[in-house]
Length: 113
Length: 114
Image 1: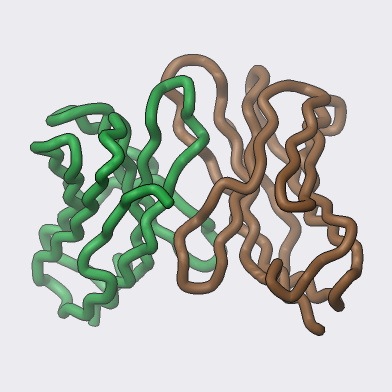
Image 2: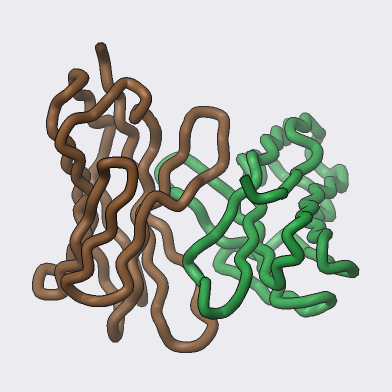
């Protein structure tokens, strides 16, 4: 079946450090891939997406590249801020018909000043 | 921000009592979803709706029922709450089949079953 595996957290960084949160997936066919972010006390928000191999999604300084050969969609940011502290969820959706979104377990990011 | 309102936002109840959570949207989106969020599990789909009176089960539907009598409202009912249903429940909406994966979430309803 379809599944998403994320690195365990929390990830603790100092402000302006480089961020990588790993995400790998298992799916039949070629799914669309997503990163969602959940700030404290809020619902999830779509951060970025990629719909086919080699696509790069980007938003708010975050980016992730859809790597079919390694079945990965790692989230990166060059310089994190305290305001980036949140839980990040990787997710996939198959592209045929009505397919539900499958989420990873989430990775908490803590950024200190 | 997408117009999604969940109510109640917090509820404490006792085992065996019925509970209904409401999701109200002002976006006129066709698709609505109920997820639960638990540590170590991420988000898991309970039920979803693809139109008025059209609903289907997700991966963790046991013990839950839903109803959608109007486009804007999607109700989640726990007929007889159990402690294992203590969780944070999120409603989400999406506009169309082409936009699947691009969900807009409500702020969540925290349910505690004692």
